[in-house]
Image 1 (cartoon, rainbow, N blue to C red):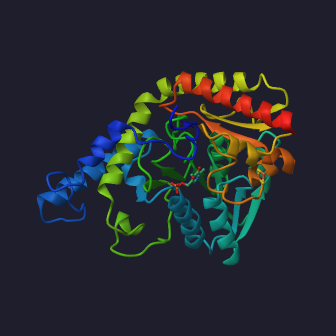
Image 2 (cartoon, rainbow, N blue to C red; image 1 turned 90 degrees about the horizontal axis):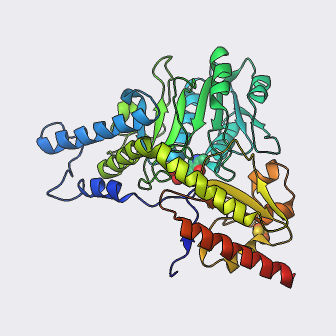
Image 3 (cartoon, rainbow, N blue to C red; image 1 turned 60 degrees about the vertical axis):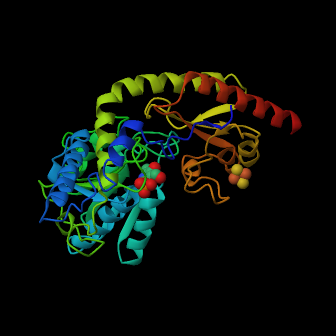
Length: 384
Ligand SMILES: Cc1ncc(COP(=O)(O)O)c(C=O)c1O
Ligand code: FES
């Protein structure tokens, strides 16, 4: 194989060719290139129509109303808007926020910023399987709690949070629930009403759409007020100014529409590939699955290999593209804070890999990757 087998679909996915085709039609002079905010001519109206169709496609995947979708540049911006937007709009009501130790940095860093601004944040610790329980949320609630922010699927472990059970609790206490669903769209059924979710961060590029576009779902009833974080022309009902990126938005809409249509088929195939990968890798001695074995998204496994240095392992795997921890923190030499939070030793956290299968992964690629990894481990262990 000339290029490495791609098993890093949790970091990002290739754009589905059907999505790319729709995006292309929004770029050039003979396409739908207009500014959706132009009210005085056909170019603007056509672009606006395309944006609104995409809004409906995105809303449909999470069973929301299209008026509840605010376009952003991705899940990072959506998380920032949700956390800072709610905190500042409700600061008279209370200053306490609940989140967890294993959130993405795009939640943890805004929380740190809010702490500097006078808010208090409780960071729930997961159990050793990476699970945050509804009961922990209930026990952490205070009279001055305004927001609970928890991810739907963890980006390093693939472990799922029981959002519906947590939503029952937050709704009963009149506290808003924000969910980072960057890792679960198209992988798990989402219904913001059944789950009592008030805000949900979405991104296109983990679901076969383009990078640099996402959305925040903002509930209308009971209404969630948000302080805008980007001010300008008053786009998106004042919640997020800036000329809408029609081609990106159309791509996200198509990607989410396909995700809805193909979720069952994709998940069945991807689960089988994940199982195949895991059963092959677990033939090795000293192999450990990090995170709950059942409560997880279809395509992801995080595996610890005893007595192997992760960095050396990664370097010896030039034919397989995988990740140690998450791509966003792998630039640092710190062991993953997620793996540390579920109780792994520094050593085991360092020797863990995240492997994520996607829509375009083949059985042949999985077999090749498993064999390559097993060979590398055997070789490293025989040298050590
Ligand atoms: C759980 C989670 N939240 C947020 C993000 C950031 O999303 P984006 O790349 O769209 O800003 C990611 C992906 O890196 C993620 O996995
Ligand atoms: S894997 Fe060796 S330094 Fe992190």
